[in-house]
Image (cartoon, rainbow, N blue to C red; front, side):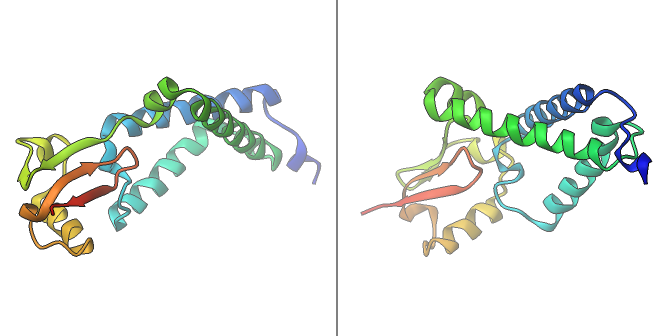
Length: 157
């Protein structure tokens, strides 16, 4: 029972490992583009599970205690809260973390190459159109890929 509470490394190493994993994964996800997790498909869920499993050993090493993983998780949650707090107070930092929206279609026409640059298939775009009760891109004044990965539409009048 005692070994459940004995850490295999100093507490601060769990904190550092958790923070480094958070920042590393955040950067990796930002580099993969906005659509990576904007619309959770079964594939995205599998990727999240595998990434979580792979990062477990990076965060806690060979530690078998109950406390080690909680220290890593606590450091990730605190870092996430801190970054959110700073982003809410700094437009520049918010843009750095979340990015800015991208125009996919304007005045009833696609922006050339925009769908391909952001790995959005024509079929996925058309599904989003239908989900917003629109039949075709000709009905769209502007379609944007938002920083959260969602596509928003302004209908033409």
